[in-house]
Length: 453
Image 1: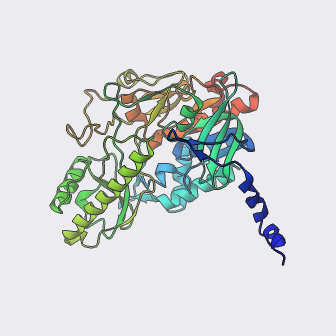
Image 2: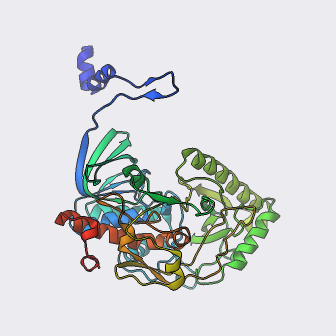
Image 3: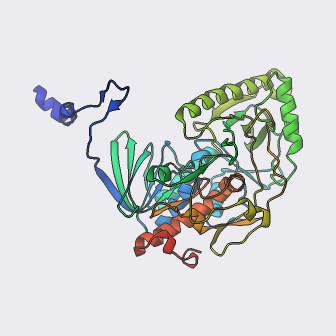
């Protein structure tokens, strides 16, 4: 075989021709100059959802079921975000939710992926590996076009400040996708920030954000052996099991960075553990994320090693896996048409365009470990309140919605609605709204609440 024929057969001829393209070059000013290039538009959709965590999957499935051609862009190699890549394994504030949240639980039960107490009561826990499959099945059945291992890295607006395209990076290179309506479910509001939206960040006085936590899955213990150190039921008092676990970890030689370490059972002798706090790190800084992940993994291994050294019920405890994604509680809060406020929680406000009733309390994980390593006190208890559709619609860029923890809200409100049992109905509402807007040629702000509920 001649060499040129071999290159053609192997598909390398086209690749080699790229060698003639102008490459980036370093400059004397300490920067790299990237030559201008045309990015191919690899496809289009009615609705483009960025981020496939709980909110993103719900948004994509809801949009597709409304008949919208839908694309779902995800950084990790699985759907679910913090539920799966992050090994969260525990869903808060789901009990009063219907729709997709109920459907997800039902599918988990059918696949033996939901945890039950010894008395047969369903708990907040689930098997993250089963969750991956359930979410993939829902998206595939709805004909959502899934793009895994793909990062959104830029946004394109037209002259009217309407978002028209996203730009992604993946193994396929740099590509663009066109859309009629976009939904930012990245958690940190990455797409909205790239599109030019305003946002709030951290505590209004200090700018500090809540700490990260790296989850771990552990095995080698039995429910009977560690009965005093965990709860199956989230409605029961968690204070005593957490305090006992902290004391046990300290007995093993390591005091956890989170003052209220938690263990909960997933199935049989498989448990999830949350005992780590990473303070002072920003969820939009890759260096912070890297350093926090390294510290977190080192700490959770030390904690488990210490427990194992105690013998007894802990003699065989070991880590099965740690999260591929560290749990980031707080990122950008994108400016929307309505900002969920502290007063909404204090008064338990109802909204005419409600898409989600939040019943979870204020949950500010301490931003300053010198003062507190547990939960900060705020002086009042939240009453159940509504998340309005307006808080899911971007204020500064047209054709853009948000769902999950990056919606429009203040610091205190965010600490309540950020949990994933609320992310799902937010995503479902955003997906339905986006689909109706895209198919009718309207902006999301023109869609009436009666059209989606």
